[in-house]
Amino acid sequence: GFMVTEALLQSVQCLLQRSDNGLLLLQSNCEDVAVAMRDIATRSGRLQILDVIDTVTADDTKVDISNLPQRTREWIDLGGDRAVGRGWSKKKLLPRRGRTETEVACISKG
Image 1 (spheres, helix red, strand yellow):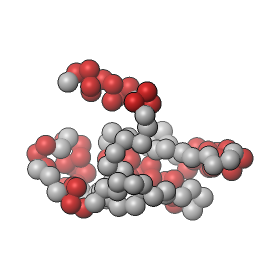
Image 2 (tube, one colour; image 1 turned 30 degrees about the vertical axis):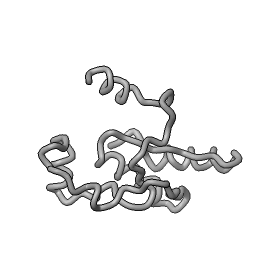
Image 3 (cartoon, helix red, strand yellow; image 1 turned 90 degrees about the vertical axis):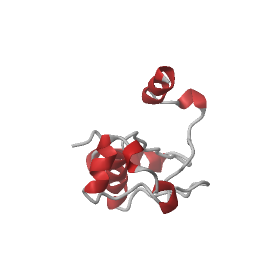
Image 4 (cartoon, one colour; image 1 turned 120 degrees about the vertical axis):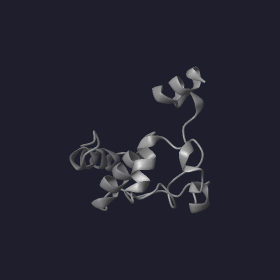
């Protein structure tokens, strides 16, 4: 399983209800994990997908599959849903200082 569970997201949703304009950003560098987290988050209907300015389109996924990570290629081969459409952003949503350790490591490795 994933670290994101329905029980965790129910707790988050309760916290967000108490705040003014509270938002939750789910992100992963693995497409299948991102899709699964979104499915878990929206399954109950308690959390909603927000529109983004620069949405990922089907055309954006038309790339040379050999350039994709093996995990993503396997996900596609299995017929897994792609991170395309409403709520999927082409652009980073956090400022530079909000980068994840994975992003920092990728940049430092070149």
